[in-house]
Length: 108
Image (cartoon, rainbow, N blue to C red; front, top):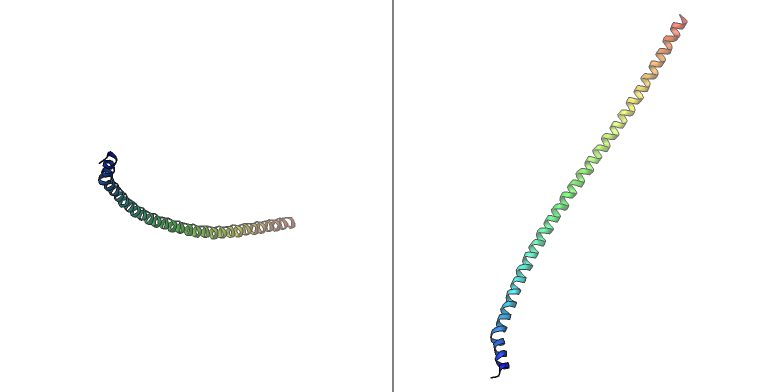
């Protein structure tokens, strides 16, 4: 046998099976990594749905609070307007009463 044939024989007898074993281990690790990746994707998607759901709940609550505040503001504006009108009426009435008192005192 020549040296070249001896090297070929060593490669076939030792390296080829070792390479196949390494490839098999890498394939197994790829499968494990893929499975873990898919699990993590499922978990991430579930968490994203939960976050979206909570965000939607917060948005609905904020909208509800906004509507309550708008109604409250509107009611308060109406109350202020009525109080202002009442105050102006009371003021006019007081002016009229003073005018009547002056006329009575001037006439007497």
